Length: 496
Image 1 (cartoon, one colour):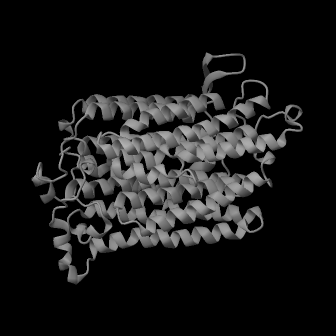
Image 2 (cartoon, rainbow, N blue to C red):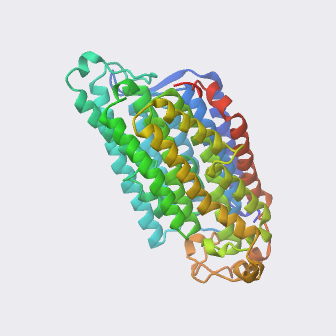
Image 3 (cartoon, one colour):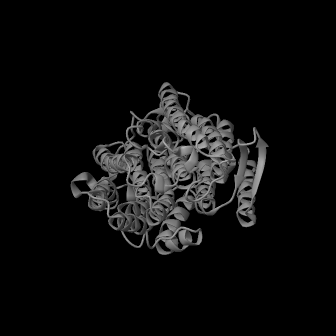
């Protein structure tokens, strides 16, 4: 679909590019700025450090390429202006999370991100969309309130403005005798901020929101918005409390246990799921928990491995959701068993799907292999009883399950069984059960009849195709040079 059919597309593109330029200039200049002083200790402040330089480029990349994909995908949808306005505002909120200079600022921007992404989930305004949007909202607010509890106690046991410092800024004099209270608050913060990242038991919103949201929104939620929880966790544990106060405590043990459990549970649920977007949502639960697992070892190598996986997963999962959107938009396919032979109809799209899938499995030279290697090395090097062995084993088990639920899709797409008639019937038949929210054309009955010519075409136009190709290229580049990028941001990949 031509981008020109989307009202004000040039304006939205110009705003996005201008925002990218401003972010790049801020990264290059560095420094810090205080926007508002609520009290001597509570300030709304922003700054640039290594974590900002590492994560913000991923935010800019995914938001920019998905925007151009959305111009094509949403060309015939209703409420387009509403969608794109909240799209751009949510970018500002997530960028603000990355730039936040203290926990109060981060918390406010974190909550604002939730409020600006909920409309993307309930965009179709059907009963199912509203239900999914409310579930996402309630989970996110509940998690953020648990995170706020941690913020309260961090400020109580510190003085000054609480500006982020690697290693933490708590004061021993204020903390003495209250270590147990601090650990409980930190555990609440880990679970609370982990809600956005899909950490068990607060993962339930992901498989509900993703199948309902438009494909561009799903790509953002899974690819980068969920990573806001990861950023908040890093800021809380590594930059506020300090890993030394948590290492060897029950908090670390529970954190590692929840991360390992979530990795396995997400992979198993994805393996059993037949709906394509829901399968990818469960995969996100598992894959982001790789990051949380790396962080839970509380060492520099685990942090670097987690950031590597954050960057690689951002590109790979964003690409997978965009390809899933093409399958629904062009062919009306939303179930995995309908993918037979689609590689002949949309070959470039399915090639992009395969590249992203190989990365998530952990096949070299793609990004997923590098990040999993570093996380496994961090686990073994930690020397923590049970988990130094269990974590690498679970990564291998999860990789096998990931191969089991992603690679057969590519095989069936390009090499359908002869008994299936080369897959032609599976591709050409309409899907009368297809819900309206999967139809970018906005048809109330979910049928393809509104734009029948679209099902006769192969891959979508360049506006939608190029974003997927770019994300595949990033997956490869991160596999080859991702370690150098993370190291340049100040996070050592080698050593503990």
